[in-house]
Amino acid sequence: MAGGVDRARDAWDGVDLSPLVSLAQDELSRTLDAISEAKTLLMEPHLAGPLGLVADLAALRQRGVEKMLWMEEADPDTRPVPVHAPTRHLLFVCRPETRWAKTIAAHYAADVAASPEGQAHYVYTVAFVPHRTELCLHYLRERHLLPVVRVQDLCLEFTLHAPDVLSLEQPRAFADLFLHGDHTALFHASQALMTLQHMWGLFPRLVGKGDLANRLCDLLVRQRHEHLASEACAPLTSASQQFDALIVLDRTVDLVTPLCTQLTYLGLIDEVVGVEHGFLSVDAAWVGGHGAPRKVPVHGTEDALLEALRDDNFAVVGEKLHKIAQRLSHDYEGRHSANTVQELRAFVSRLGSLQTEHASLRLHTNMTEHLLPITQSERFHRVLGIQQNVMAGAPLAPQLQAIDELMDLGAPALDVLRLACLASYVNGGVKAAWLESFMTTVVHMYGYAYLPLLLALRRLRILYATPPAAPKGARVSTWAQVAKPLRLVDDDVDERHPRDISYVFSGVAPGSIRLVQSICQHERTLQALQQSEERPAAARIAGWHDVDEAILALPGATFDVMQVDEPPMAHENHRIATTVVFFVGGVTYAEIAALRLMSRQQRTRRFVIATTGMIRGNTLLQGLSDIALDA
Image (tube, rainbow, N blue to C red; front, side, top):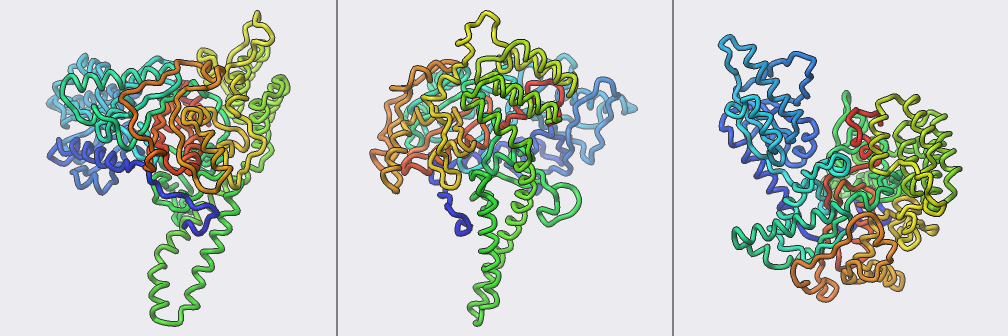
């Protein structure tokens, strides 16, 4: 497939993370095998994606699962209906949330009520992912269900989305952590990162920015000491020979990036169609089928064409698809020039791969045709224009007026809210009069369901009013002050042959990845790259040494912890070192694409992206409301 694109993607040559998949598969098998008889699996719908990345339906059947059903949250106003399952054993798989404990309790009560003997017909087991919590146990205990409901832990930690992408699949982590103050996701993150250290040795260095990033770092250090105090563990006493550092950023350090519209191919697909837990729902005709929409994986390397295009700016995707279509047509014509038996046999041996490429081309051609009218629409360009102006430091008043005009044109609520949040956050707030008028208009136009979200945004100081007594010059956020030292705006972006990460937003660099560049001294790499076409070796990780004071003033703690003496660096001994970048509160596909560009730009460093979950601007905002909001 590489022959059909202008720039072949380098095969992943960083740390092989596939053992994590085997670990998850073993954990799932252990949970299923704990019930030796046939069972019915009742699953929380949001776990279908993560489990689908670990095992398919055939693998579940091999472990005795006869039927799979979706859990439906119990409605307090509706009488619960008993489960109708073909097996006596029921296995519930869900997050440790009270709503699911209530659902299990409701099923049990309905089961007992439907029995003439007043006893449950089914045997109940619940596997909490990744661990039980005291809150759920308390709920079950209060209803006298612990003796009759067996509790297990299904310790699924990192899900492998791609050879270089790890996710805890907790899309609501941002709201839980930063709005509700629930730090459970931090605990799960620390355990998952400890697993990496158990398998590959200690991260020699922990570097990061943000209060919750610092909290995660503290948890890692403390858990390491606790493990060493209980038992000697060689991987926790020596530095990893594969990983050279763990960089941790919490989402509040850069809230600007997820508020902007992603312009990479996979990022734009996520914005418009929505990628959920590594899967994409598409029209059945796009994949040669009929009927209901089909689930298509966007993880791993199953689709070579997607792997080649996913990180490109969408502006060049159509041209690349056209070239691939021409090559495929030429390859198919090869059957007419096969004059000998050997030549015919060679063509037949390639026929399977050609058909696979053709199916992939059909899918992505249809997807591109679906995206094009949206990206060419006036509203899309209006949105991008406001984003670019805000990021470039243009006067605020015209941008707020443009946001009002978008509402008048009937733009979707979340599009409008993202722009308002961007304008407020970058400029250190907006005028109180405008904000009051804006909030009133949002509630009247889009409904009162958006009021909790507006209040949450104000509480988090994302969409908020500038204090009346604030001096005129104070209406500039710390983020706006780092725009110049971090080179957030790039007027000389090359979308076709990108040399700078700003290509992912067509001229605006993700601030989070600029921070990673600062920590990794990536500027040296860029300078060396400009002087030679050969990829230079990676510079030594410098942490926060010589970083501009304005950058250090960004929200949250700044830390740099040495766990052990640094091992020989990759650029010194020509071995490839892998740096893990963990995003607390979620990461976007645009940021992943930017880090992959950094990997391609240097010879001896690769980046693994790890996160609590994948996010986009809409899901970040939706997670801040307890009421379902339209995208």
